[in-house]
Length: 360
Image (tube, rainbow, N blue to C red; front, side, top):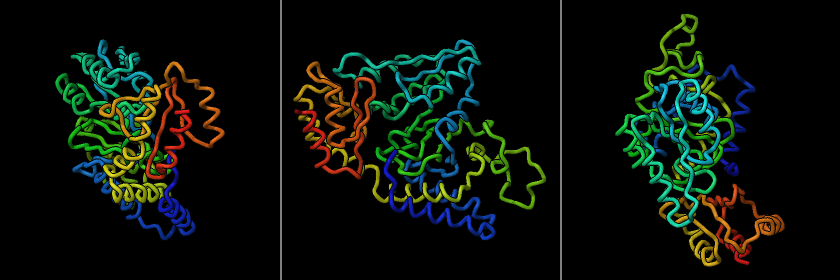
């Protein structure tokens, strides 16, 4: 999880205190702040229509809406990548089992040379007429490998398949243009690079899902639910388009203002600037680590805010872990990879300290 921004914390405290006097919360406030959040997030991901964006509680919830509406038959296949985050795997396993379809997992190449390039080529070559969905991240959560979403989207269109992207590991720190990629779904948890709180996320749903059925039958995603006096006159129609997929109680008066404050701050900084900051932070150190025998993906196929460092034959992972703990350096370990995730809250001195330990 990201550290919590001060403006996000303040928004949460203000929201908490609001509940002291709930009779002062107007019916309009159940929708207004969420609409503002849609507009701010639309700016961040370059979505032309904010009403394609909905509030969700988690990535698994957002993907469940896609899985429920995915046209899938016996003999079809769904493509995922190796060691993908579970929230972007379990929904497809269930959907495939129910339909008699196949899950095809594209594992990374074992060789380190041109690893990202070859991995992307393997994904593209696996997409065929039986493919109904490609589900992956913008970057891989374990090592930051970049996936060529623009080319993958083109290939999925050629065969009539959907593209569902888990943007949790990148959106906010890495520029993302939904109007350029045109995914059928972009699902993001709020607590990582969006710098928001836990238990809230944001989903973009494309036109392919406009007439679908949501996983949840709540009152607030029904047509004309804004009219509180008319709620007992039950309406069988959903809100138009993507709005039908919004979670119940999406008007959360604590989490929504926190998420809004975070997205506003990201728009003020700009993901391009954040990514450039991280690039400048790590560039000299990565050169030193490669010279010391560590294996790091080529710049064209990795992000700068999240990347993996793989050990050479002469490196001892247990000793490295012990030294990091001793020096209070916090990184993650995923398989044979050290996962490093710097952002604007890190300094060059911190990264140089990290590099010095590995170099030694």
